[in-house]
Length: 143
Image 1 (cartoon, one colour):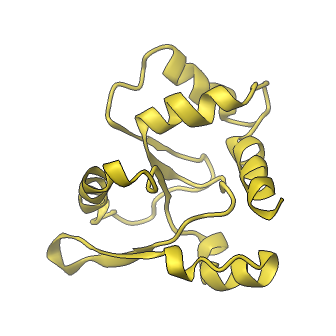
Image 2: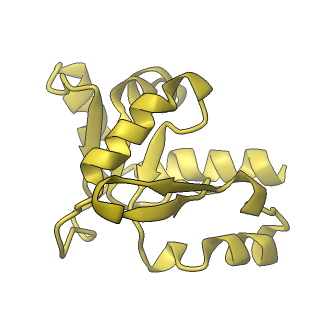
């Protein structure tokens, strides 16, 4: 139970050698191809200097109508911060900042895990990143 230590150990052992890392959840997997993955990584490359896009959580039931839910639950209006993106072959979508780190499959810059996520928390067996990082993130925003 809890994947935080396993993720941290993969980084500690040097098993992550790519610019991006996909962290999958055992109970949240892809049921279709992800045709926009290459375009998403290209967009992340092009916006790297802006600093705002470090990790993308793939859609789930928790993120359906996310901007509305966040405004209603926490009084945080995310609409001005969302970005419309277009990829190859007409694929398009909207990237919206998350106020909570959900336990979902995600694509992130490897450096983000190494420099921000993993060093900020002491991890114990059974910990989940969404509980450690997500709770801290939401608390910071709702303060």
